[in-house]
Length: 358
Ligand SMILES: *Cc1c(COP(=O)(O)O)cnc(C)c1O
Image (cartoon, rainbow, N blue to C red):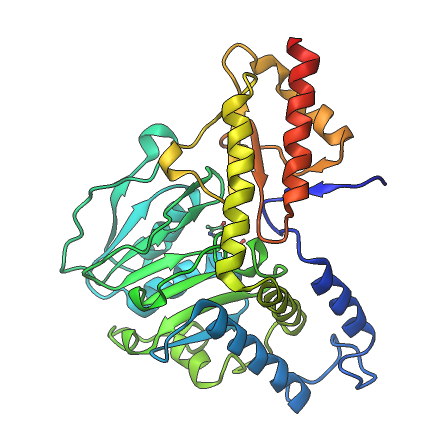
């Protein structure tokens, strides 16, 4: 196999260093002679990994003492239910920015009164709705900061008069976040901070305990805060690899430095999309995601789509087919994707242009 460039939307590319350390730990976890897959999670060696991982989250995102971070199984999709169970009492508002936002709303509707405060469904979610009024009598506003499928992103931390809850599955650790503005930030690790199998939830502790329903023990965030994510067996290996990924982010200079790199990568690719007459971007320019870059063949060249996919595949590009609900192409350029990978895709687009138009 020649050199490949991985643009998968999730599970994502992970840093080589994290993979190498995971391989070593599969054989021998911290010199114990036992594989990380077989160690007891009730040991001081494992406690040290949990502590380090929690510590790195707090350090990298400057999480204030008002908040705690927990690691759980079940995927971001189960968090949709956690959110409603833990926060929905009277009424909740959801910003409808795509499939994931919609699924989060659906779970809330199963629990209580929840509605879409604004939607970009009219243009197939190619922009972020703006200028909507947030009523002060709702329990919370739920947003999806990065819309993985459509390549749109809310890049600033909203000022919100009610508790703000954000699904940051696909842009966590790609930009500095003012955590103090959120009651809850959650997401699956597999888009930017680790392998599939673990979620992170950053919870403002005093935002909990405000609903009257019985919350099943496993669905109650307080259980996991109290037990430091070890109420039951945690997803040990996924957390191990997430920790290694965070160590890599730190070694790169932290989230601030990574953000600069991510922005440069995104600028490079969007510049080519805007320049190359064969391609056109699908997301509104001001809302373009720096993580998922969506584009299609320009009008008049639609018939070249399959040919470009095959052409790119031959040159080692992996995972650039767009989501089935959008079509075209999507390059996910998460943290571990290098500038060289993005440059290779840009070169490939240029080569294709030469082949077709000159
Ligand atoms: C992928 C994704 C999800 C779903 O994550 P799972 O862990 O597969 O449940 C939710 N929200 C966003 C924004 C995503 O990108």
